[in-house]
Length: 412
Image (cartoon, rainbow, N blue to C red; front, side, top):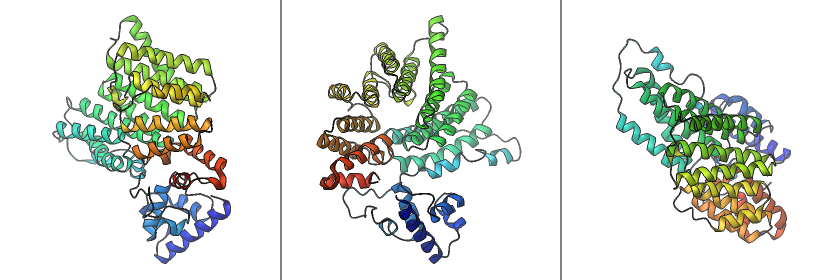
């Protein structure tokens, strides 16, 4: 959005807000944002590029998104996704202390923990995360996490570690969702809380799972030195205990070790360190070979197939598009989650875009969107590739490409 466009947009928001008789504080609260953020929007300082935020703002102002921004897709247009994928409700959960009400409760009364119900809720949360269903995930986490936080402080002593274990995995899901939505600062906080809850649970390996989520948050923030430090420290600890025999080589340990090697591969690829990136992919492949199958320990989806999906991504980041396509052509990701399949399609699209295979790139991006519509809006590298395709094609861009760029907010 150009500076002129931002000022016109902001003036329109302020006008509609005034017509509804709302203060900045009231409108900001209604959409789950700060008054400062809204003030910057109305002054033309802060752009609103995400379609989900635009739709939320338009709905609160009583208009359609295209009435705020003419380039926003209309509800009747093909590919329009009506539901929001915003995680602002979950972000609010990270503000302040997680369970003040439980701390103020009078008396030493301990409550019974409905473990079967909570386990089902946690399983549902992860199924939504793996399915890329962010709106539903936000709603589920907003209900589950406060309940677990309260129970962690009111459960009987012998039940408390189990509750903390479930809380750790809920925060891991939250961190994973924020990373995928490019909300890395919130992912960092969620991952840190996952690690703290895991330590309280006594489940040591869940601490490493939280470290994996923290490393991904650092990676998304482009804090590559910190991502490397987090992941490498965890790898060193796991490897050392495996060598001494203090830790058994279980599927869970191998999944964690291999996944952490993949994080390091991504770090080195983003930094242009080709040999180090390839070395880490090789280490992950060896862990997957020892594992011998695709699994989902700690919801990492680690196994031989996921290693090759990540190898495609690493190759694209290194600019080795031909290698990425060769690896991708041999892959069958149908046994993994929709999120993993969509990620593969996005990276294949990026590889085709690097080689100027315009039709193939477009089809891959459309395939990814069909699998997980919300992903195409939050994958920064894919949006950049779509934007590049639009620049290459210019006025000759096909209606399909233009529509995709509009849905991905990649027109400018």
